[in-house]
Each structure stands twice: as structure tokens, then as C-alpha cells.
Length: 400
Image (cartoon, rainbow, N blue to C red; front, side, top):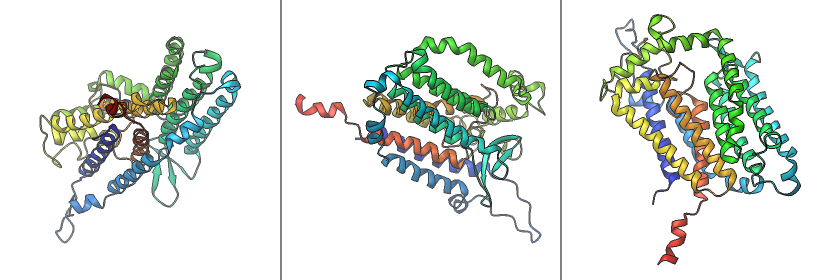
């Protein structure tokens, strides 16, 4: 019988496969005819199999398998059980551990400003480049998934005291605020994602909702400050409200994305036959790949993508709801919510329901580090599922 972990594995493989095909399709270009009258070969099955995205897919699948065999349950039982005795009353050691973990994540992200390895794209310092290799990655991806683990661990350890604002919740909020705030300096969408997921997990761990409600004005003011101090963010908000005010400038990206989505109809123009990818839609292989999917595969293709994400999220929630180990329950919730919320944000942006942000569609939009770390994190859910015992199966002999 298929378990939730099997559905996660199937969903990851399906999304990665679709991602490879669509990234290569979006990468098509009109090639000039050579001096000898010959043209380039174009996209073929061989070129797809040998493409960079296929290599990243294989690495992501290896990461999925690696995450599935990690003894995460043994780690949770040894280090993630609720604190007892003096440790439960004090909590300084747990707060210090959380602080050190968050400081390490901030330190990793700060490397983007270091000359020689930091790489700026379109004025944004989000990437680290390995000198001489041509390989680059976003350290915010490491921070995003690292926070899932840290917050789940802290929530499990301090669940009984999270209802106390100063001694339980504040240390977590300081750590989350530091990491999310540093990400927001260059990437507002990912920073909001990390902060939102962390708050949700802390509430699930035992924090009081009204404590967060009290801090909503502070969070809103911080978000407004992050927007108004960045002219390009203000422009994105204004463009979202009326993209046709500047159709050839600030509104061009959103208009072209909506044109691609609308141009597909029910079943699309056909795989490889989209028009917007030929110099009209920017970022067509990365953040706006879903628009190309809609144009070439239509509503049917979009429904397949959304259905796969829905199955992935449902499976993750099933695993989290069945889990009895506090840290693993919170980790399952954290990973599942991160994938689901990130996908929702991307779909809203591409379809014009939200302002433009640099946030990718998980496991589909082109990106090596994102695919690998997302697959590994979902592999951890498979590992959790493998260690669970199904209560219904355990009761069958007694019922017989």
C-alpha cells in the first residue's frame, strides 16, 4: 500500500521532470543560419538529457534519497525532546544554541557582499560564485531550510514555555527576526516567507496567538520601511496596482506574464510552440516559468502542476499529523508549509495576483541549489514517514 512518503517521492520526481522539460523549452531561441547555410540543431531529446537542468535534476534526486535515509528520528529522540528539569525552567542553553545557529546562517548570507565570491545580478546581491567554476548559488536557500530545522528544534525543546513571552517566545523571535531581516535586505519575498513559516511553527509548538497579534503592527511597520526605502520595491507595488500605466517600462514584465498565461487557453499552443519566451517575457526559465507552462500546455498543464503541489502538501500534512515526536511533527509542518507557501506566492505573482518578486516555483523553476535543498528537505519527510507505524495496521489483529 502506498504511504504518504511514496506520494512525496512521486510528486518530486514528476515536478522535477516537468521542470527539466519546460526549462529547456523556455530556453529555446531563434538561432541565426551559419555561413555554410546550416542552422543549429535546436532542442532535441539528446540535448535535454545532456542539459544542465538534467544534471541538477539528478543531483536533486540524489538529495531526495539522501534525505530519505538520514536518521532524523534518532536525532530528534536524542536532541529534540522537550526539555526537562532545570533545563526546562532555565532555557538559556536552548536560546544560546538557537542564537548560534541563526548567527551562522546570517554569516553565510553575509558572504554575498564579500569581493571575489559575491555575485550581483540586476543590482541584487543574492548569489555566491565559486571562482573559476561558473557555479553560483543563493545562500538564502540554505538559510530558508536551515530555519525550518532550527525553529522545529527550538519549538520542540521549549514548547512548554513558549506561552511565556519573555522567557520562551522572545529568544525565538529575535533569531527569526535576525535571519528574516537580513534576507529582506536583498530578497523581500524569501524573507517574508521565512518569517511567516517560522511564526506558524512557533504557534503550532505552543506559542500564544495573541502574542503574535501584539507584534503585527511592528512587523507591518518594518515591512513598510523595507518597501519605501527601496525605490524598485515601491515601483513594483505601483506596477501591481496598475501595470498599464507604464506598459513598456515597469509594467512590461507583468503584462507579458499575463499575456503568456492567457494565450494558452485550454490545452495550450503545444510544447515548444510558445511565443513569449522569444525575447518578450523576462526570467522565463526561472521565476516566470509557470507562465510558459500555461502558454504551451494551457489550463490542463497548469492543473497538473497545481495538482502535484496539492498532493505534495497533503502528503506532508498527513505525515506531520500522524507524527508523535514533537520535533519531527514541527519539522514536517515547517517543510510542507515552506514548499506550499512558496509555490502559492510564485503562482500569485505569475498570474498577476501579487506584485513581482524574485521567488521561484519549487522543483520547477530553473535553479540548482533550490532543487537540491528542496528535494533533500522533502526527503526528510520521507524519512519521518518511514519511521512511523500506522495505528490502523497495528490494531488489525485485535479487531480480527
